[in-house]
Length: 363
Ligand SMILES: [Fe+2]
Ligand SMILES: [Fe+2]
Image 1 (cartoon, helix red, strand yellow):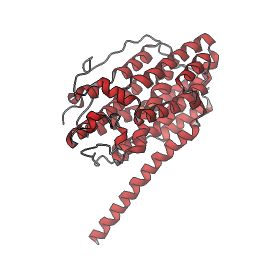
Image 2 (spheres, rainbow, N blue to C red; image 1 turned 90 degrees about the vertical axis):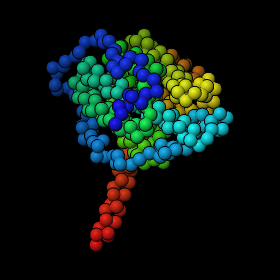
Image 3 (cartoon, protein in one colour; image 1 turned 180 degrees about the vertical axis):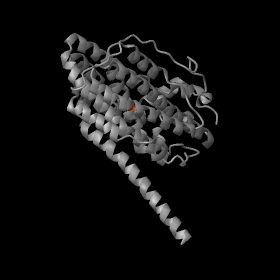
Image 4 (cartoon, rainbow, N blue to C red; image 1 turned 90 degrees about the horizontal axis):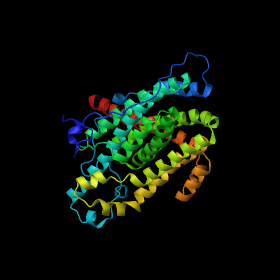
């Protein structure tokens, strides 16, 4: 089979390896006794809930020819645009394949970002209990890269990491303050990921695409909990000035996510006018749903970790997203876990019916 990167419509700017310079101390901790009960509890859960992408997911399932993930048409942000609506059936199918493939590519590339960032947390965070937990997340993220890679192989198209995502990951990785990796990855990028995965988990009629996203989300809800636990303890110890710097970073990141995830690479590859697409896309139902889901995931966490000074509250008020602070994060996390279990139950049911049919045949 051809390599995934051979399917990129244009090569990644740095070739096959991207190197980010680092400037921080690796931190050993000789104090083995002081684990926080909540953090050790989360570590235990991380260990117990490991799964194998090879066996939990039925990879023999295929994607749809015309609409790989079988998503409703309104999930394509340029649906309704005159140029798109006048296309032939085959041309529309190509647009869907490219846009959905671009999204899954970003998931896969972002998951590698998470893998690297979590490994950085293991080496850099001072607390041993956090190192323990983060090490379970490292393997979670490897499994996520693997799962999206296998799903993406079925698309026949793939894209390099989109520049706004790369910018965010670069900034987080270069920062020598350990908490900035958490803030950028565990709060901002995980929040972005959860919002994007949820759209597919909840709307894809294709069972393979829905299951991959449901299982990944089950892990991600632990990852967000980790960021909350670690930062909630740490931020009250900082000065107001130090907290202000973090709030500024968060605000900037929220603008970036709101305004820069535009799939411009897809529109260019397909020969569409990116400005026209962007104009249509901005007010589309798809983007509205995405933004709402994004801020539902991020804003309450920001409040919970204590970065709730005038910089953030004033900035969020201007963006019109302050109200999302009321979201019940625990309920969201619980439902992410329940939904993943429903997918397991569904597969077990289908298999038991298939097995029963087999025994009837041979009887
Ligand atoms: Fe992940
Ligand atoms: Fe994650």
